[in-house]
Image (cartoon, rainbow, N blue to C red; front, side):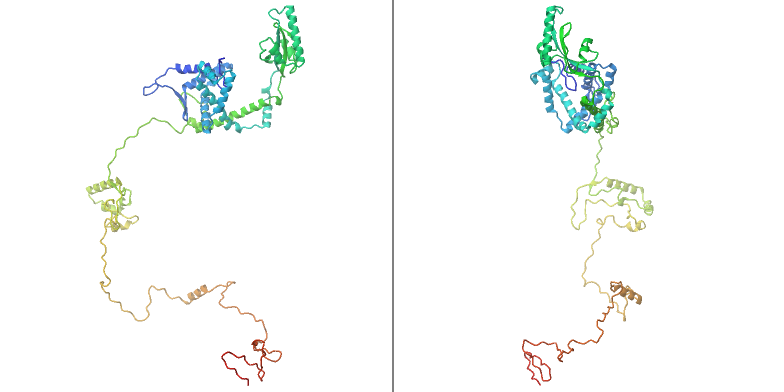
Length: 579
């Protein structure tokens, strides 16, 4: 089975639409628009960073949009209004793809899964069969996969950069439903299933009519006994819906025959009618779903409300995010085309394109290279003040002309190769020539005459070194006679007077804790009031005086006849006999 139209979920159809777009692109005559006389192969109408949108891309997208809107029943005015947003949508897609490339999103895994779903949808055995079916319709299989890949990348970038930042709460969803209740109001409708028992080509034949009625009653009995309606429809139904289990679809009130509407709208979900006589025979109808009219309960449409609320919030968020991407990108629109979502940065780009103008070749000037660059702005080339100016005004015209040419040559000098200078030797090649005009030192206006004779460069005018002589060869100078009496040094300071000496003594003295001088020590207070006596002069209780001497060892000390104790013998000293 070869499908007539390959549908991509939420995207473009890849059938005769793409074929028509290719035909338009190929049939469009090429016009010579190049100023060099060539032929324009592809006209670029927009540039987004390093990606381009050609006129054939624009025309292809326009034809696809027109066919899609005609299928939805749109008017010509609505189709014309949609063309204003076409270029905007193409630029948005390039921005999404560029962001996906930056984030590293390729979409290859999802692409394989999506192609496999399409293959199963059209009952194709392999991917080669899907590619063959696309080629039979004139669609390149590579373009077919590229379109699906671009949609996958766009959806993933939207979900990552915008969708994950929108998290509606149950309260917000409930309030959105209360504010948009009328949008969910719907008329009463039923979803029906059928089992048709045909009477053949002779519906009025009593025998066939009775046989069909008996068969229909038997099927009704099986349904009431708990039989599966869809299975019975596949087995016994003679209508076109038998293969689908008898599914007739959804019908609103007023769309059915009055007889059928009267029989079905009064039943509840899951109930069946009795066999109804029709021109084809007898039909048994089952109410698969009965939707009452009016505003439904929130729990019945909660998923739809949440999806609608998310889309209402995501729309402005996406436009804001795309505006930021437009400000960061470099977008160029060809005159004659308009981007309805252009930002201020896009309308007034900071980068302008102009025709290329080759630079003019500069004439090289041969100059003499020197180590130092001498210009007319150095201190040696400054003009002298008024006093020096009057003296130079008397010079002749040829001299001034020579000076001007010398300055010009010095100003044109460029740094050259360095000269190796030995210690104690002046440079010979790399120093500039001394200027012939008078110079002055900075800030020395009244010393112009004195500084005029000084050389500009001390290294160029070195004086002869002073000859060294011996000390003994120098002439002896007579000594000045010494004067008698004290000699005062004229440079010595005057002697200090009495007040200055007192100040110096006060400043050099130390300070005490109380801030007073501590030159005089405080006297200690007397601890006793009686007469002072030595401890050695005190008498012992037995009438002897304590001499402060202790006996040696445990030997008893002998006393002299007069009551005194002799001194102990000393080594090397003869003992003194007692008297």
